[in-house]
Length: 182
Image (cartoon, rainbow, N blue to C red; front, side):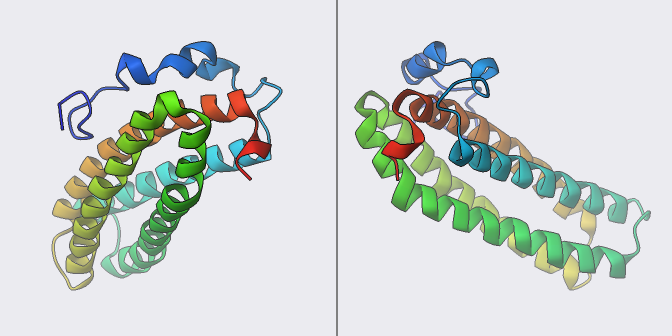
């Protein structure tokens, strides 16, 4: 994969994948007549994943700095970490098997964009496995500093992916309407 498409190195979508975004810029999404409950829910899910990851990262940093009791951290890590890992895997599964194929069929010019997002999901799955391993190491008494570093790296990957995904998917939904994807 070229650097402009690699999740670890890209800084945004390549111009060829931004065509509908130009027609439907982010700052006008909420006011668009086709912006409905599905789009709102989907964006809220993304915001929820970002917030969970921020909380997990802050907790790991606080634990590493001695500001969070290890037992309190363990409880929060199990609860928030489980919600993050399982929620993100479920979310990606629904996208990969339901929404992305339908949206790609409705916007064939963006098929490469949906392939990019699918590749991101595979890369993120690898990151999630590493994150789960690091979290389990902390729960077994390991140092929280390495978990915090892994969470910060995951934050960069996840934010890049979610932003790019929003900039591919939302303009398609605005263009075709939520009813077209079922």
